[in-house]
Length: 349
Image 1: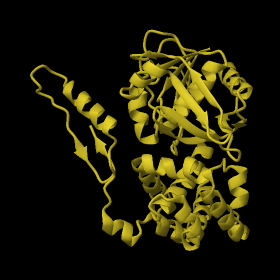
Image 2: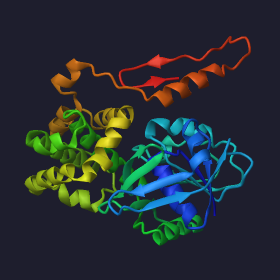
Image 3: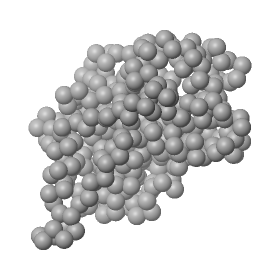
C-alpha cells in the first residue's frame, strides 16, 4: 500500500517505521522541524523492553495533494485534529483515513472536508521521542485497536502490523471505545499532575491512587448511564466497584514499572494542554451528577498545583517553528499578521 503518515511523533514514527519495514511505501507529511530530521536520518524506533531497533527510509511530502494514497494514518493529539483535517482536504482518490489518537467525540470531531473513508483507531504503544528516536513499549493490556468491518485496506493494515509482532483487536463501537479511553487517560493524567508527573511518586501516594480509581469508576458509570457503549473489557473488570483494592495495587505496580513513565507520564508531561482539555471535556460531559464527586475532585487542580501556576517550558525547536511560521504572514504588506495567544499550558499561533 501507499501510506501517508500525518504526525511524525512517537506514534507516527513507530507505525511508519514498521509499515515501511513490512514492505509498504511510506510517506510523511512535512511538519518542520521534526520532518527535517526525518529527511536526514529516516525514521528510527527502539523497543525499550525488547532492546530492538527498527530503521526505515521514507519520503517526506510537502502536502497531501497530488499523490494517490491507499491509507492515511493520522497520528496527532486531539488538540491538533482540526489542523490535521485542514491539511487533508486535497487528498486524491478515496483513501482510508484512519485517525489514531485521543478523540472522545469520535467521528463528529473529524472535519467533513476530509476526503476519503474516515475510520477510527488507537495505537497500542506508548513512549517518548529522544534525539530523533521513538523509544517505545508495546502495551500488552491495550493492543492496537481499530474499528471492525470489512474494509480491505484496514484488513491489510492489521495483517501488516501482525507480521511485525503487533497484537491487533477490532471493536464494533470505536466511537464509544474512544470516549471511555479518553475518560481513563484524563483520570490518570490528573492524578499524575498532582504528583508533578512523577510516576514513582504517584505509585507511593495511595490516597491519590484511590481517588484516581474511584474517579474512573464514576466516569465509566456516568458514560454507561448516558447510553455510551464500548467500554474495554479489561477496564470494566479492573474498575468494578468490588475490586477497588485490586485496582489501587495494580496501578501502584504499573506506575513503578517502565510502563508508568513511557505509557503515561511522558505523554502527560509533553501534552499537558491535550490532557487538561480531555479532563475539561469529561467534566463538562458528566456535569454535576452527584455520583461523580470523586471525579470532579480529581479533575479540579489540587491546592498546591493551582497556587503554583507552574510554567510549562516550550521546547526550543517548537519555538523556532512558531516564529518561522509567523514570518510567513499572508501578505507582503503584513496587513493580516499572525497572532500569538498565550495560555497557562500552551501558546497558540
